[in-house]
Structures are given as C-alpha cells and as structure tokens.
Image 1 (cartoon, helix red, strand yellow):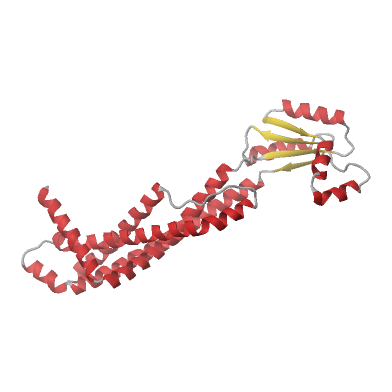
Image 2: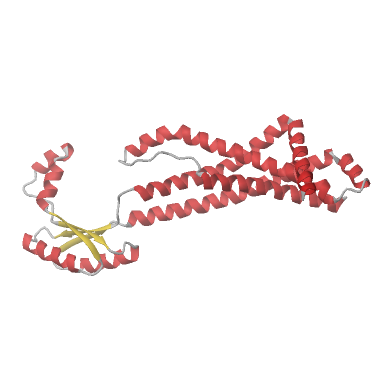
Length: 299
C-alpha cells in the first residue's frame, strides 16, 4: 500500500513539474478551460439565485373574485359566506369598493381622474387563497366561481407561477445543454494537450518500456496531468464566476429594488463549487484516458 501511494505521489509531482515547465502554455490552457467552464457555471449561479428569489417572494397564487357593479352589500355578504364555506378555499379577504376607491385616490397620478368620475367605478371584490395552489386545482375553483350569480369577473393570479416555472425549466435545460457541449470541448482540449505531452516525451516513454515499465506506470503521470489541468481550469472558472457575481451585485440590487424585491447576488455555493471542480477534474481525466488509449493502439 505504501509503495502504491509513493508511486502515485511521484506521478503527481512529475505532472506538476511538467505543468510548471511550460508556464505560458499551461496558463493559456487553464484560461481556455476556465472560460469554457465559466459559462455553464455562471448559468447555474443565475438559476440558483432565481430559485432563491422565487422562494423568498411573499406572492401567493390567489383568485380575485369581482362582484358586478350592480350588486349591493347584501349580495357581497352572501358571496363572502359562500366562499368561506366552499371546499378547497383556505382564506377569503373582502375588499370593499370604498376601500379600493380610497386606495386609488391615495395615488397622486390617479386622484384627479377618479375625482372627476360621477360615481365609484370599483366593485366589491374577494381575494381567495386556495388550499391547493396547483394550477389545475385553482382553475377548477375559478370555473366554479364564474358561475355564481352577481359575480362579474374571476381572475386567476397563478399564471406568473407557470411562467416562472417554465422559465426555470428552460434555463435548467439550456445550462445542461451548454454544460454538455462545453464538457465535450474540455475533453477535446485535454485530449489534444495530453497527446502533445505524449509526443514530447515519446523517447522517455520508449526507454521506460524497454526497461520493463508497465503501461500503468507510464500512463499515470499523464493522467495526473489531465486531472490537474481540469482541476486548474475549474478553479479558474470558479474565480471568474465569483468575480462576475461581485461585479454584478450592486447594479442587480439596484434593479430588483425598483420592483420592491430583495436580492443579493450570490456566487456558487459549496455544493455547486464542489460539483464544478469534481466535473472539471473528471473531464480532464477522461480526455487524458482517451488520448493515452489511442496512443497505445497506434504504438
């Protein structure tokens, strides 16, 4: 076991020396891999922040039930009692036409227009919170409420949830597709770099084979080279995404504040960072393995 660890440690040291032997080439390779990985990693960061924003908003899918303008307060009271006792309704909030009028008058841009109207144009309304906030269940409730007498209009306020969910699904699919394509690109980069390393050290490899070195012993430094190359590119990608998050944090905070939302753009969390570095190292290993197997077949 000790000999096995010593062999792997020596192979890792040799891979590090080969990286350090050509600093400019190594730096350019790490930048290429890092930039490629930063694109899907940045998309994952934005998706995580979008999910956090959606989870922290206080908006709840609700149904707005508007009474007919001709309905009196007695009809509104009957509808309110019926809503409170209806199965599937969790909470009912009554908005009188007088309260709505006062709230609209409090808006300086609407006060003059409303005061010029001969009568209160707003109807009594109810804000209904459903026990089951799924789109199907709420649509059934809305269809039922539309059939009630003295009910003029029923507005279902869950459309934004379906749109947000669809956007998040599209974003996840796009990030997965982009990550797959750029992951294949990382494998190709690792393949080309390891192939160049093999060709550079061809004479050394041939001497090792003549001395009886096994294929595993010969390939081990190149595999570590691919892993270190991928891991270094992953670190570069992590730094790029973190820097972008810091750079965009202030302007994004100002933007969401205009919509009365609170969001502080966060970089990749510990789990996503570990996944990024693990995938980068793994893809580097895959590229090196493919390159070495092709070389063995040709030799």
